Length: 230
Image 1 (cartoon, rainbow, N blue to C red):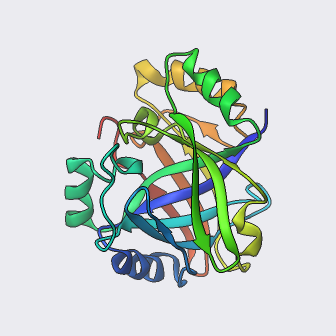
Image 2 (image 1 turned 45 degrees about the vertical axis):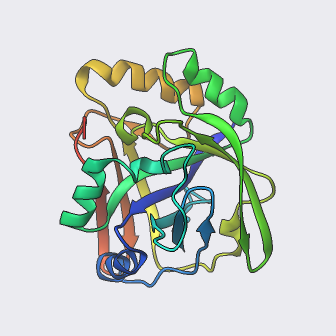
Image 3 (image 1 turned 180 degrees about the vertical axis):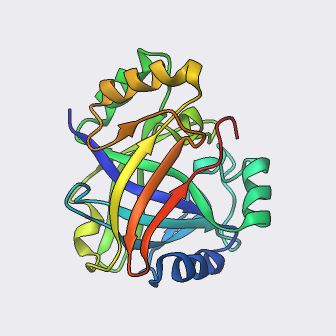
């Protein structure tokens, strides 16, 4: 099984706020994205690939007011969580989560399930792009929650090549990725990371469940999710 970071997720109250955050924080304008009809969200994308993370990109995601809210499940990435909604409204766009790509999503989900951690049930997802229909399988959590408060990723398996190959190379690159849990949960997090065979991801003890460092035109930028238990 092969598992590596696919993309990081920046949550925003509106997509316009997310774009403004990207320009102010990273010094670049994100590229186009699309809509997720089954989730009621839309996004903008930015390639952040590097030697250590060759397929990495950044997703800015927000609830799309013109799309119907899903009725069978909450939106992904905790976007319906009242605490997250309040934080985005109060503090603006912020790092929420990450997604790892795998070549066997069913085996990967089963690997953490055996340890008592559910990453979600693999489901077929798609959206239309200028190049045609983009299709993938995604580990959707019925509760909409991020596994271990965002320390563990949701999983994705692309039907074809990752869309990052069609994104232009830019001036922002992903330098490092670390995940963490409260001291009592750190052994479980290490076991899950080993079971997934996560590549180039450091497990450490930190107040933030997930943090990344990005090399930008303005220098090194560190992004962190809210503290554990958020």
